[in-house]
Length: 245
Image 1 (cartoon, helix red, strand yellow):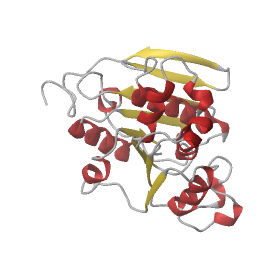
Image 2: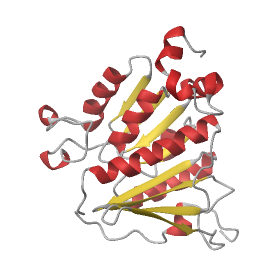
Image 3: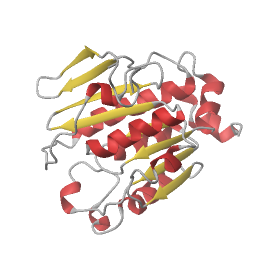
Image 4: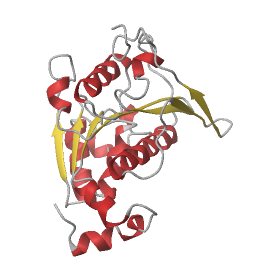
């Protein structure tokens, strides 16, 4: 799909970015991004990918909107309590940008469907709140050789990294076992920070501009308002990408 005159007006300001231009916007228009989760992280991720002009967004979630979600899950409003998150989210995204395609899937991501769900994506974005599903997405990204942008939050902090299968360490190199499931604290702005960083990474991967967060983990500390980086190396014993698997 080529850009229309309206596209050129709508996305003019981002096309002014060095290296972006018409070609970068066309790449976005022809791209598909898979977003796993329509909650705290998924809300800003989906919102900013939509307004950036990503041609197709696949939004997957199996949960319903609860009042406790409303402090951070900005795709969902008071009147959406009790509705499916993907349905609530899809309505907002289509209103934000009528020119893009939203595929809303009310399914649980599991071993049986993860490879089929993700196979057509150009980028997979982890907007989940649990590691078992993140590990499945990590495996699917490696099976399909699709870039995978991981993000997670807790309280006033979070982390983010970009995984390029075959080139960088994967999520299983970083986290070997899923932590215990918990109801964790989170300030609404925290997934906003991490989610928009994930969007920036996804857009860079699609357009080819900039330098993604490769071989390193970006840590955000909102309490003291600083960022740190930790170098990550491949684990040769990793069951997903290790040489001994």
